[in-house]
Length: 342
Image 1 (cartoon, rainbow, N blue to C red):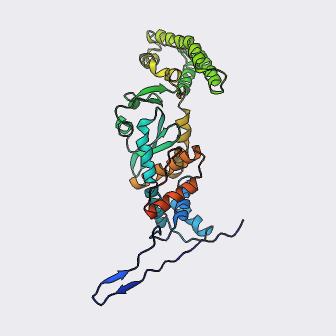
Image 2: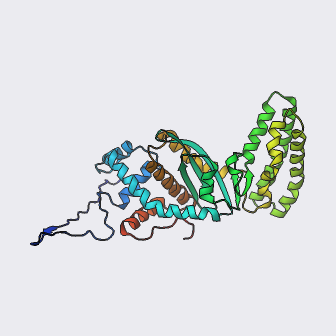
Image 3: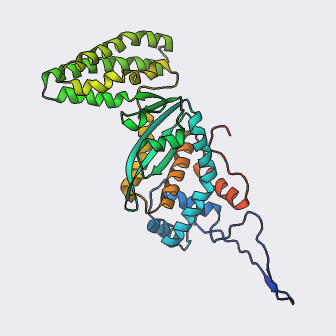
């Protein structure tokens, strides 16, 4: 491993006092940062505090011990703010693209912002993943991001804040766990219902696996799903009129159309695993950091997690992209895009 030495470039701005009393100062060349850190150091520090989940203090310690760059936790906050502002244009471009996506996988997890409770949301589209940290879990958050007229398919759990947006696909992985809960219960009627629903669910996933590996066409899949769909709905209807399992079956039966969007819509899947897998990175970060201390910290986290996860999905060099974004910020030029192919 070669010796690591910081690259230091010095700019001297001469100040001159005119006879008339006017003080003039030389201007920095275009693209030169006004602070001590250059684009690569800012990008590296931002990744330390987001992707690699280091605290401000430990990130500063790394710069001092390993890179030979004196740093303090307060300075790391300044670098964090610079990185967040550099990423903002690309992040807002993704926000504007969300209502145009035909299929979205959405999930959320609780966190903290100062002393207030907050939630980290994740929106997984076909080519990008967007994170948002907000102090609300209500439907108005979705209205802000998707608008009231969103017509695509939303993959989600059965939380009510999703019910007024687009067409829903409830996660069959969640349902499978619920069916297992019926089987593990003490009520014989619930156990029987759970076993019957679990058998149909296993048949569903077996067919879906063939669709994913290309051995079953979509038209054939729809045809073979018809008896499975009829069986599931028949079981839910039977349970709807049985007091012992009415509470479990009521919502599923009355909103049974939310179970089958993946059968009819190309690009939709039976589970919300894409959102849950993406959210895992944010959950690990939250468990290590215990949330953020301010709205500014939340903006940094949501934007950097978005950059890291989207670049990973698009097989881009996340460090190179982030350096280019900071350079564009200093030069006053358009920031690079996170939309695939742009």
